[in-house]
Image 1 (cartoon, rainbow, N blue to C red):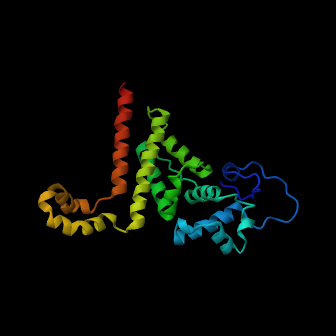
Image 2: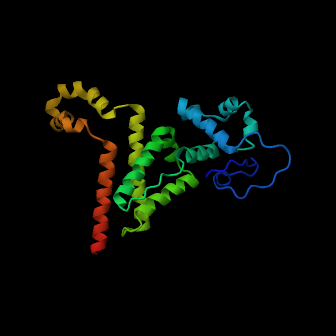
Image 3: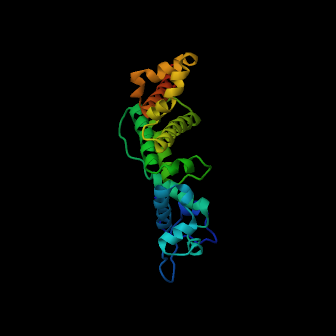
Length: 238
């Protein structure tokens, strides 16, 4: 778990904050804040107002401190983002299913639910960053689900990237609209009515009553897993 220990701004790095060594014995007064408390303050702001509202100045204000005082604990925004992202996802839920398909589907659904709880985490996850302990635990859980598949390590990592990318793309849509498919259909209704002759297949797809009840997350996850199953079966036969 991300450490609650403070790290001096003079030597702190993302690795120091995410992967701290044994806490040193410190003399003097107890530190006023922990890295976790600062990151959690940033999380509350991001949840309420979006990632752009998160600044060291704003966090300091909410914590009743000064911006410069917080730099003793977190040396910069990149380090703050790394800790916020790791804490937002937390540890993956345990899934004891012996069926790798169910385990992978549950893994993807877990990524979706954690990201949906903190939609700003999608942007941070897709930026270059150092994985923290929780993020690495998600890797481990996903790779464990595929342990028996005849796939290369790089292919297994690509499977996780596909599933996570799909889950997070759905979060982006859901964050912008409670019913993205229905809203898109409504926005295009007049255009498709006026230009139906030019777009017959699009009109038919939106008019299909089964499509209106579509579950994009589930559909995409199932198709990805089905493709993995085909590849794994071909490797077994070979």
